[in-house]
Length: 423
Ligand code: HEM
Image (cartoon, rainbow, N blue to C red; front, side, top):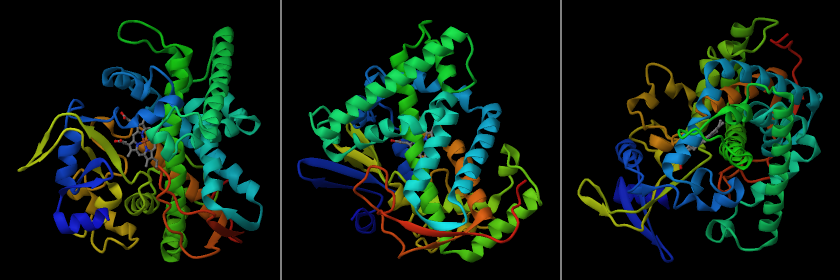
């Protein structure tokens, strides 16, 4: 419906569903306008309030935009290159352990399997080793219950006492107890590894105040929710597209042989030299952006060219619609990673041609982390296994906030007889 709207009405149009008015901005110039609008005009907080019972009071969308950006700003040092170098090793290690556990052949539900893998990577690198150690003993379960708290009902009535909201609130308390316990241990021992949790424990607001344990828990949950499931979903779609592009998979394998030789080891640097792999992820982002709609509430009337969007409207951009514009991407329905390689470089025509990671002041802070993670996972998996879909290519499940494939989405795998490129 949204794509048809663009074909019939162009780069800005309005529509109504029930009592609500919506406006969709489509195409790089409209994105540029949308992402540059001030928070007083296009407001994110008014839309994302349903996250408050999960992230907690006083953090992220339950604070002023200034405090939220100060809180998220604490994390930038934790995403600097020195740490990204460490994260690359964690991603390699977790992907290899995952591949080892698969055995020689079998069948997996790909979204579920990659969800488990990315929970391990995210908890170990983004939160702390202690949380990774507890993934199988309670954390994964609590995290799953928290995820179930993100549902349609919760969007409109986040405090309604339903069964899923009650287990969401129980899970929130459990995670808070776990994180608070780890922080207490770290304070007692006087040391802690160089991770997000420690970065936040050492941080101070501009007025000199330290963050409370509950604020730290909330910020860690914000990052985990923003970064884990989205990564699992994009990893799944990228893999599914590759399964039906065997010639391109061979190019990724040739590239891996060149980069790693016969007994290589993956690192931050090696992952920068895999353009074929990287372009496959980028094409996954283009065709299957995990967040298909970004939404803001219009607080003051918004003038775009000769049109005015009234206050109260839900203003949106849709990566899913914009990534298939035929005037930007040639043959847009086709999986064709080379569109991003020279000479075409289709994504370079405009800085907002691809918007799978958003833009402007709310742009994703974890894009490089996500790309590195996806490249690491699929380099290892394609090195070890041949994959095939057990049934037809799945349709997107639009019923979920993060748009993955309909499940179950079964994939068969068999260990390759060729020797691994890794030591
Ligand atoms: C494939 C994986 C990912 C995708 C597709 C993705 C996508 C996005 C998008 C579209 C936004 C903008 C939302 C909006 O404008 O309403 C966003 C924001 C955000 N992302 Fe990501 N993301 C991914 C991974 C990550 C990771 C790994 C992290 C953390 C390391 C992360 C942290 C964040 C945060 C904290 C924000 C909020 C920024 C703000 O509002 O100021 N994301 N992400």
